[in-house]
Image (cartoon, rainbow, N blue to C red; front, side, top):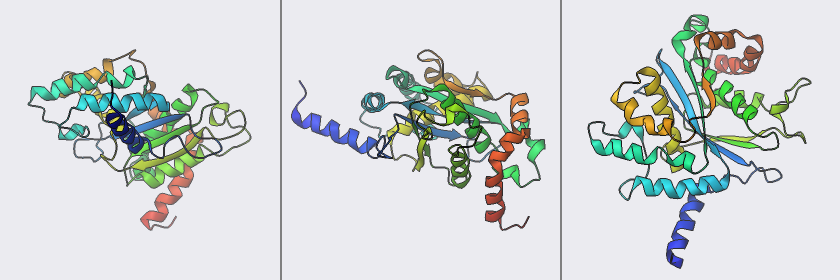
Length: 287
């Protein structure tokens, strides 16, 4: 039997983690919450290799279940999981990842991911004002969010929470705003049947401020390692989060042909036009 004190402690932990989510806008709060994390390269700066943006989406009850199980899996010595802080020469790291990997899907959370390789389309943007904008993060984010909207029920609104990436936040915000604007030919996946934008709200949280970004950190890191070299120790030790559950997820890794087509696509460039103007403004350059 769980004591009243223990129950109060658990309830306070859940409140601290979930405070502010699933609550606003008050007239039509989101039904699902998607926590996201990007992985570029080891140093945190983009390279010509693979970039992964990944996370998990679920309802409130699924996130409550996850928080309790994840904290138990971390053990009493850890408050959260930071993949770049792990010691890869110790077997307890492998054991930790093996223990944590199956937890998100066992709680009903669904994996979401997107991946691009900058070298696949570098020649299309190098030397242009769009080079910074399209250097991985935004080019990866927009198709991934569209896949999430297409792959979830039309009546459900979604809240996006990204782990902090300050250099991209203004551009990501502008791109997401564009996905809430109604036009004459807007596709049905952008809006609920009563006309509300499917994207209810979005925001950013500081690194390490919540365990709810931990599985996104794990999944994004695992995918980038697997895409880079699936025989490496890191890729092998991270495999439990990729291979757990059904093995299915929303999104995908963009092929060279697809990412080049996306970058060149006139409709996609319209989405980026206003962000381009922001890039020019922030850089202090004149058109």
